Structures are given as structure tokens and as C-alpha cells.
Amino acid sequence: MLIVQKFGGTSVGDLERIQNVANRVAETKKAGNDVVVVVSAMSGETNKLVEYAEHFSATPARAEMDMLLSSGERVTASLLSIALNEMGYEAVSMTGRKAGIVTDSLHTKARIEEIDPTTMNTALKNGRIVVVAGFQGVSLEGNVTTLGRGGSDLSAVAIAGAVKADLCEIYTDVSGIYTTDPRIEPKAKKLNQISYDEMLELASLGAKVLQNRSVELAKKLNVNLVTRTSFSNEEGTLITKEENIMEKPLVSGIALDKNQARISLMGVIDRPGIASDIFGKLAASDVNIDMIIQNKAHDGTTNIDFTVAKGDLYDAKSVVDDFVKSGDIKDDSYNEKICKVSIVGVGMKSHTGVAAKAFATMADNNININMISTSEIKVSMVIDEKYAELAVRSLHDAYELDK
Image (cartoon, rainbow, N blue to C red; front, top):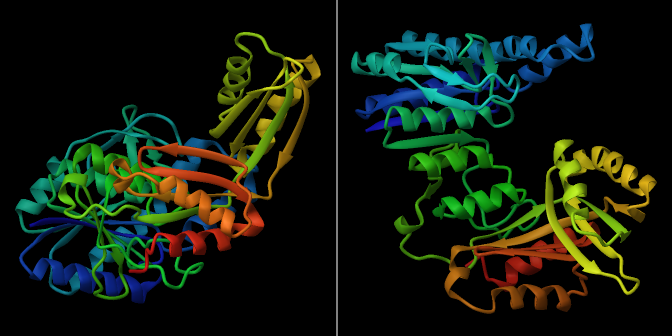
């Protein structure tokens, strides 16, 4: 088999952990597999480099930040390669450039355009373990770029697709995907497998094990993903095509997102194009909108409620203020003390009453639902933040996810 293994910052957090990773990689190679390893920077290293840059400038050039931050992964890759060679396993470390990862030119959050796996394939053919510095690539202009948050996961999935790997293993500090956050619900159960679409929903709804960009790419490239812990030999969770899953659960998981803010626009002038104007300006300010509710008031105006990430609230307020000043909106209000709780499962496609059970569970616990959003495989509800953990535990019990 050809296996891509990715190790995150906590897995390579110090020299002892890098040695543990080397031992695990060696075991995989010894079992007769070809191996490509993708590594993150050692935990804390990226933050330290950011602090160094901010010592000199509050707004350092993005191209220089890419050059700086990409060094963290290169340090880990070379150290791991040195450790493997010392153990008698021929290994070679590669930067994103050497691995053939070509990106666009958007510094600090570049997107992968293509991967030329020639150099990696040659090394694999010669029996070497390939160790790639994740999170980085090179633009068509030849400049170093980084891929943004979750970039090492993205590197691993893209490389797995390029070299046609049989499996891509994402090693983290958790043992897999759970039915909900075990810190909130101790009865949470680890899932053996989950579909790409379910994982995409959970990732976008607040589950932090995998970034949705990497899951999207895995689905596009048909890469079988396994997420597992690097601190034990415990089996992880397989993320794969829905048709590969024999028994499709009604509900696979409960997600909680506390990074939500609600914006209410009252007395919006009722004219064609007003919603387009408002949300167009928000989009131009890079404000990502989540849920939207619009209803007509008795006086002929319109009320619009929508949610954004808390980090986008300042920019959103700036846009809304302009419409208030112009008279297009009579009044506005903001609420950061909310959260979004969601149920996700491919089984919803073929079963009725799933949403009704969620609403009944909220009612039974005297939790008022402020906003509702649904898709084919999810139901999301905005509620007051103080009820967040109660809602998660109650829904987990209602759908019997611990069984």
C-alpha cells in the first residue's frame, strides 16, 4: 500500500514526540508500505514566529510572512528525516516547492492549483520515505506561499490524490471523530466511519478535528481519510464515500458552534434590490454570512436577521451603519451571546420526524429556538449561549448516540 501520514503540531511538539513519530512511520514502512509523511511545525513554533515579526511591524508584508512561517514546517521535516535515517530507514525531506506543490499567488491563504508528484514518485520508487513540509507551496511566479489555517491537512490530502495513495491518515491529539464533543458529553461515542458530506457539515458547524477545506478536497479527489491519535495504536475514524458505508445512521453527530453573532435589521426599506445591496456590501467586506431570516413587518418595511462569525462582527457593523445613516434601515441590534447547535446525519434523507424530534427536545428543556436552518442532512438551531451544553447533551440523549 501507499500511505500518506500527516502529523500535526502536538504530534511533533518536541524532540521526543518527533522520535515517536519516526517510530510509527518506521513501523508502517517495515510492514511493507510506501510512505509519504506530511508534517506541521512543532506546537507553538508558528506563534513564536508571528511574535518575532510583530516585534518589527504591526502589519508585515504577507509575502515575507509566508517566507517566515513556512520555515517551521521545514524544521520539523528535516528533523524527522534525520531521525529516520539514523534508525536505518532511508528518508528525504522536501519543501512544498520540491514536492511539486504549485499554488495561486494569494499570500498567507493560497490555494493549491496543481501538484507535480514526479520528485516524490522517484524517491518512493527508490525505496525512500518522503517527508514533506506541510502548509506550503510555491506560486507560478516562484514565490513561497502558505495555505492558511489547516494547511498541513490540505497538503496531505492533495499529495495523497497526486500520488494516488491508498489511504491518507491524519494524526492529531484526538482518537477520531465523535458523536459530539466528549468534553461536553462524556457519553460521546467514537465513530468508526462517516461520509464526506457528514464530515463537511460537522467541520463547518464547529467540529474542529478537520478543516472543511481538506474534507472537500478529499471528496473531490476520492481520497480515503482516517483521523486518529498519534499517542496510541487505537483505531481512528474512516471518512469515505457514502456508498462505502453499509449502515447509514439517522444522526451521526451533534455539533456546537459558539463563534456566532446575530445581527437584526429592523425597518429595512422594502424596495427591490435592498437585500442584494446589503449582502453585496457585506460580501465585499469579506463578511461570511451563515443563517438568514427575512419577514415583512406590518408597516410595509422588512426585518432581516442573519448570523456571522464573531470575528466578522466589527466589519459587519461598519457596513450596516452606512445603511442606517442612509435611512435604508431604521434600526439595528447585535447579540453575541448566542450559539448554533446542529444535528447531522445522512439517514435524514430517507427518514421523517428528525427535525420534529430536535424541536421537541428543545421544548422539553425550555430552550427557545431563535433561528432554524436545514439541509438534506442537517438541522441547525440558533439558541441562547447559556443553554449550549444542555442542548448538546439533550439532543445526544434524544437520538441515542451513545448506543
